[in-house]
Length: 151
Image (cartoon, rainbow, N blue to C red; front, side, top):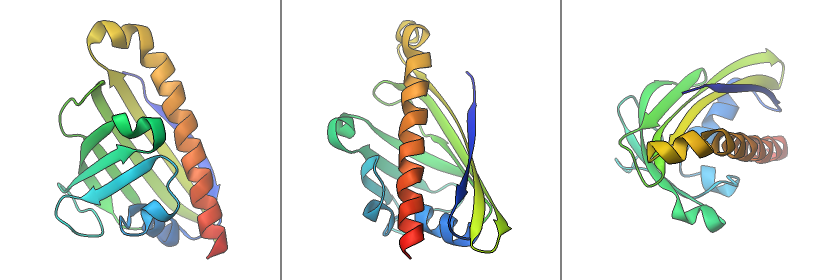
C-alpha cells in the first residue's frame, strides 16, 4: 500500500482551517465530496477513537465508509482509518497536519492511502483509485479554501 501526500496553503490560520474541516455541523456547507458526514456520537467534532460516517455526493453516494479517529489534536493534526472493509474499500487511512506559516495563512499537509477489494480488483485498479481520490481531495480542499477566504 503506497501513501500519497500533498501540501496546500490555506487562506486562514491552522486553527480556523482545522475547525472548518472537522466541525461536522459546518463541513457540508463547503465539502464537494460528501453528502453525509457525521460523528456517530452525535458530537460536532471528532475525538480519539470516535467513529464518523461519510457518504459521497452525486454518483459517489454509492460509496460510504465508517472511519475511526486514531489521532486528534485540534489545530495541529487529525488522522483516521477505515473501521472495517466496506464496499469496494479494503483499507483507507488519512492524516492532516496543519501549521501556521504567516498571518492569516497556514499549511495543510494531507496524506492518504487507499486499497480496493477484492484483491484482484485492487491489483488492477488501486493506482487509478488513488489518482481519482487525490484529484477529489484537491478539489475538496480548493472548496475549503474558498469557504475560508469568504469568512
